[in-house]
Amino acid sequence: MKNKALTTLLMASSILGSAGLAVAQDKTITIESWRNDDLAIWQEKLIPAFEAKNPGIKVVFAPSAPTEYNAALNAKLDAGSAGDLITCRPFDASLELYNKGHLANLADLPGMENFSDVAKSAWTTDDGSADFCVPMASVIHGFIYNADAFQQLGIAVPATEAEFFAALDKIKADGTYIPLAMGTKDLWEAATMGYQNIGPNYWKGEEGRLALIKGEQKLTDPAWVEPFATLAKWKDYLGDGFEAQSYPDSQNLFTLGRAAIYPAGSWEISVFNTQAQFKMGAFPPPVKNAGDECYISDHNDIAIGLNPKSPNADAAKTFLSWVASPEFATIYANALPGFFSLSSTPVKMEDPLAQEFVSWRDKCKSTIRSTYQILSRSTPNLENETWVKSANVINGTETPEAAAKVLQDGLDSWYKPAK
Image (cartoon, rainbow, N blue to C red; front, side, top):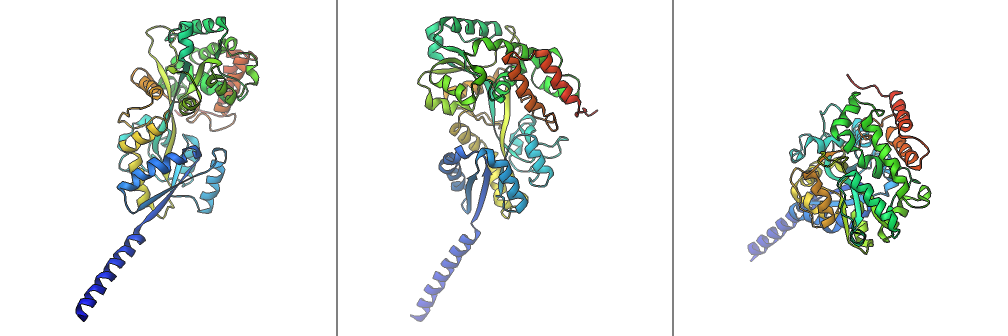
């Protein structure tokens, strides 16, 4: 009887010991991010999918407010209190973190083979020797339109610039809708949804962007001035008081059904789906002439990297390899329509508007915003200056040629292309 009791006690102790060991082995990894809007998606979809396949690893998504993220993250990194995983903005902000030793080299991480060099370009060192974040998503530029308005006015979706301006003329003549919902008050809107949206068709995407970095092209060349000239023609279609119109004003004009066309970033899709009471469609930036090759701004937007000081590096790397998987790509891209996977494995989008945007990858060549890599590292900052000049050109206070010259002179003052 004693032996039986002893055996039972030993078994119980063994079970309890094993349970204690399992608890001790559980690791919690924390993600730093600026995407506080995505909290529910992480908590309800992404984290449960990962934890179901990786028992023993718990994940906490701990975002900051977008405008506070950079300062808050840097303070935590300096204090040694940052999370295990760091959500990465594209290009120089994250490169600076890597150069300071705040992001680990992930070039050998299992799963990184799922991304092309272009997909990784926003989180790769200039010499290509290190990849310091796992790409998560890009955003695509184009135009979202009120399909009901187009049908009502008998307008076909434009493919060329002539068709685009003919459509704007028809909308303006009818008077029911403002042709284009865009303002210049916030400056960045004019550049991001204007110049960087239509520009790639002029400078031929990556061909022109890389030539600019190498010093083989200048911003005063026709390929860089002409999109400003086209942008200047938008002025007549923006509606009264567009100079004082903010970005949220533009969004509201469109979703309330008062404007027919919205120069867009695909990140608008989720918001517009909940607000617009009409059918929407989308089209890529019109080409100059029928049959021309088309280019789209398919801009690397968000990635995630490893804090080298993480006490849970192995668990964090397991998570990062999952982020690099087709499973993550499918869940993330469909949970956030308008944020498109950068994985080489195609993702079928459930949202029809998002699927329309991503389908352009099969028809057009992808590029990224021309000002983001290398060319905005000093003062004057080319990205910020392009905001100002795009707004000035649309407002009619500066000519395309003058705007381009100021931008090139500013770049020349500090940037010397590597030979």
